[in-house]
Image 1: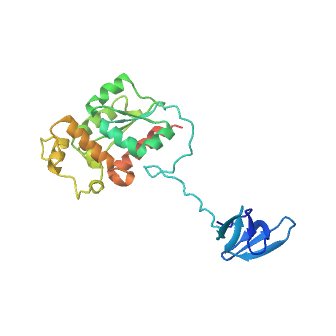
Image 2: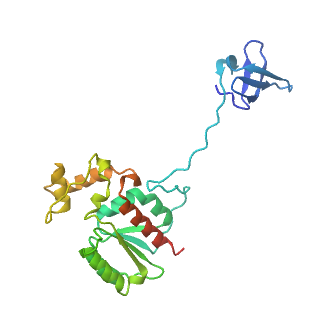
Image 3: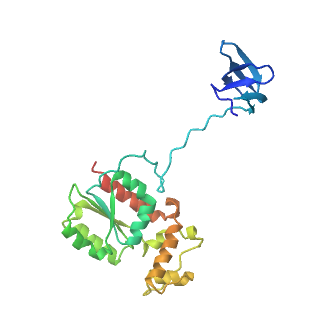
Length: 255
């Protein structure tokens, strides 16, 4: 029984009964109801509510470290759900959205940021015309394979030069698919396989790894396997981490 301050204890040898006033690594001080104080060695020989106990030094519980989210941020105290912002983050596909949710979901909910998926950057221009961004409704867009000379880079550059560009931020990672933004070590791999040109990146990856790849259900199971290996930001490539943080800063900067 830890010798906590205020604990009422009886000394078995002589019946002295009192509350713990202080204790160190070896002794405990008791004060009875008349104010008399006596010190005893810690260990056996004490009664608590008539039962034999062994008194030991009380060690205060260490201060709890602030909890961190999967993204590495300090978790905000629990609070009421926040109304979603008009500004939002757009990603190319469902897998991108699920990965962002798994790692940054707590942060996004705390900030009231919604993530939507486009089903490809080819649809971005039409979406912007239907729901134009503004100074009070800014869009941050995450694009796969945003490298010099790629189709994605050409589309992004054209949109940024257009009438919606001043209220957009388009960033991207260099990988062909978001699957490759997960560190291969998270799945016990040394590296992601190289998929030949002309072969679907998901199908080629599964084939190279010996995973079933004949049906959409096979590819869905492969993705669940990859996503399940992600525990926190540490399992993602820096090329994705920095871009998502940049987008969150952009769509929340107006406050």
